[in-house]
Length: 336
Image (cartoon, rainbow, N blue to C red; front, side, top):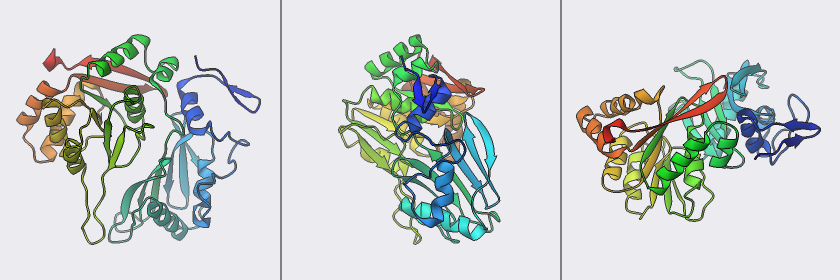
């Protein structure tokens, strides 16, 4: 069982909300209520307002909409706060610096980018331009420590019987796809499952590094956008093709969005053990969602429908109601 966690004189019970808090902040206990001491990962003056927002206890997402408004997602609910920026120029400077820390750049010609910073933050920024009159920054705070499958059982997200089923899926090397809305914990569950197979050669493919498996046998591949000259792009599909030549025991795609879907399905159909996540509102909509991606990518719906029936063994869906997560596991009926 997860014991109560002490923060000063307070005990934090092991609920799903507090599990997120514990694993994101266990290595750095919070200070006083409200804005605490800014995180030391940002010492640049331009980023001090963001450091103060990051110091807010339990914040899993931060959004900044120009200099006049910011909001924190805490316990599944948004709370408006002051951004700490004095004008739009200071917000734009922070956005440029954040993106540069992730190895990319933004300007008026290419006003948006999505980066990972030190495996701790996922940052998306879009500069004020013809698209929008304000600079917008969106930050996802990664867990400071990985969440194990057994911990998801203890906080009630996964039932004991479901955990047993998930472990059988892994042991039998069956393919699966995890679906759900944004922010419900798809990556958290996928990471927990892959951690159960950490002794294997697992190759992860993502557009922003989030899985970050702590294993010497794991290989992490991250896609890359084209530079300002339009060169240097490395797509998810290209990385997936390369991964097939790297003698993987398992292949995991952080999120399927585009043409990599067909390659992923074909990899499973040719004997590879693979998993992925996808956005979908319900478990019944997963197949339709994949077909929609196929059509948008210029693929034939009939080809994808056939491959889904032949390849995907299990559908796993995560739901969230009043900040409480639960999962549904279903064998792909086409393969039953």
